[in-house]
Image 1: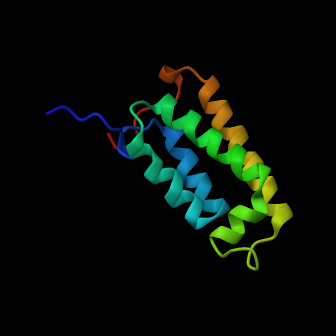
Image 2 (image 1 turned 180 degrees about the vertical axis):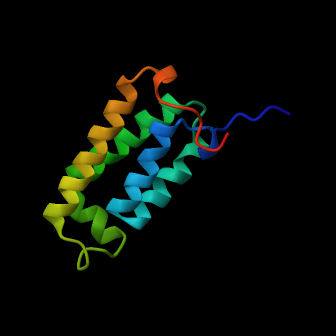
Length: 107
């Protein structure tokens, strides 16, 4: 039976870097973004979903941190800046033609 979901192993180098960068922002963000790949059929679907998620976080970063019980541990201003930088990376990957994003990370 053919696989209908994507795996992080299917991501190009640039797209996979999104997950790595998310881990530099917050460990739980890395887990969320990595896990979301399995819900997507293509890399572009994955990237657009990540961009949407990051925009939601930027609209209410305090609520996001509070939900994950990081409100006391993470500087809100720094978090907001790092999420915005991650979103900029995702938008750069989306604007890069697929053939220029590098080989899938683990193939």
